[in-house]
Image 1 (spheres, rainbow, N blue to C red):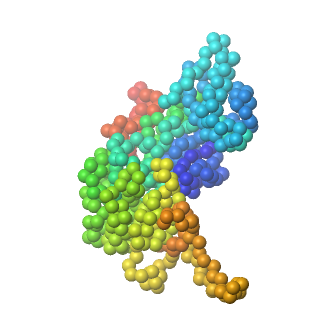
Image 2: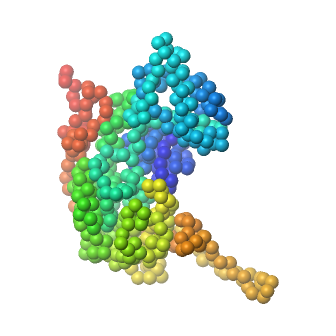
Image 3: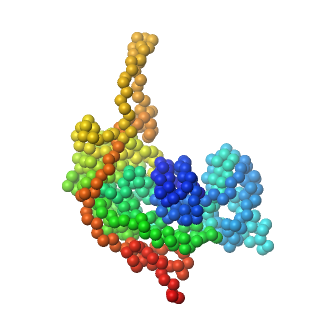
Length: 485
């Protein structure tokens, strides 16, 4: 199988799949390949926070032109996947000199499937193409002359959890938000803060991670439910497995300068049934003080304006305020900020401990981590702090004098210099910081867990009525007893 994801999240998704029990997990470019049984296919869709869709390859061959592609597709027994009464859709991804138009690839594959049914049905019946909500979704991937046909088991992209009912302009993807949180190492042991929360994506995904709530619980439908081998009882058992649940005992705080943003975040948190875990307040980034910051030190993750789709009156001043607030109010925190312009990152005035290239909404962005410690870096090190992936100091070797009499010194090339902006990930001179485990001695006492009220949300899996699921116990869900009993 193949799990698709965003660039930069491949390793995080691979870790998720291994934790679920997948075999032969291999990260690739915006994807992770793995092996498993039918239960693994269902779990990957239901449990993975950083997967966009799960593909199941079923036919591989080579083709160098559209006619050969058509002929090869017609050799497959399409009755094993669908019947003439079904609808289907095709999504093509092409990286080939022989096939330059992905839309034409889609047309040729569609023609081959339709013609196969016409040739094998006495009444010449054929399945219909449906762009949205098709019964069977087929993915065509062509790399050079290698063609792979896969079943899309997810249907609608998995980033559409189902809890987002309202949003502000340019919200971050749920998959990307969850990936950044997991990449930070946060699992609900320390406080979590997003001081510019927008529509609440980070704090809601954080609450789900901390509570052990899988993202699939909000989904109404998966494409694999239309497959001939769909096992409703297997899906039900996965849906009702509450073994990952745990109590949330740390503060999760979201803030924003916009009252409308707080309203949207509150509404989305209620739809996700995690509002009791989250505190939402109207507060600009400049008004955070040490008194407002929960202890012990935890993790701060935020997605400030980039100056593109969302901007501020003075972007340089905004990022300068972010840096000042981090230094004075969030001592001891690990702050993760995703941004687009290197020049704005410079205004923060802090050296990042690591940088990760990510894509957010089609923009090539960068995620930077800042370890906020008191005093100087020398004091931090002398107190036992360590810089992540710190290179041991090397003795400088004097190089022979070059022709012309002057000694040559090797200069560090920090990347291209084009108007003050350079490509992310090039020439990273920042020290890298290694985090230490923290304790939760200052965390609030655990409270009794209330049931996740999914019935109020109208979210139940799309399985036959005789296997209806209801919510009437503290562990989320249980199967309704057969009426005949």
